[in-house]
Amino acid sequence: MNTLMRSMLLGCALAAVAAPAFADPPDWAPAHGWRDHHEGDGPRYAWARVERVTPIYARSGYPVRREVCQQQPGYVVSQERYQQGSGSTAGTLLGAVIGGALGNQVGHGDGRAAATIAGAVIGGAVGNNATRGPGYYSQEQRYQPGYQSCQVQQGWRAREQVVGYDVTYRYRGDDFHTRTSYPPRDRIRVRVDQYVAPDDGGYGGG
Image (cartoon, rainbow, N blue to C red):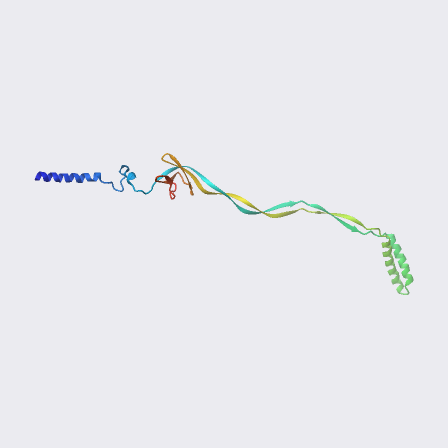
């Protein structure tokens, strides 16, 4: 009886010792790849090496207004002007003498002197007109200096803006391509499921 009891106790002790060796490892233990083969269906993440980053540019334009000025040269202006002919001095004097004599004969008393003067003035004017030559046109020239003329012109100015980045990265010996809105550094975080894809929230590490 004692021998049977000792055998049963020894068997229980061996079972208690061997049980932990065959039990599942704890959550924190790597267990020689057990976690990689027995994790759930959720995505896994890893880091891939960035091979090349190329900026992607978009070309656009915006309106601009500018003032354009030009120096206009000077030029000569020609203008014709009509000139009346002038009477001769002899004709004026002769008319004044004749007019004065007539006025002296017409006047009486104190009014004779006034009539003589008036006759001389009128006679001089008549004599001047009688000897006046025909009118003529003269050409007059003047220089118009140069000036600066300005006008506002509207055009377009082009500009380039970075809208993204074309990224080539290597994961486990294969090259992959993606586009990101930020410039990754030497590595990029990728999601590893059935396919390898970049993680949207995975910024490149330093």
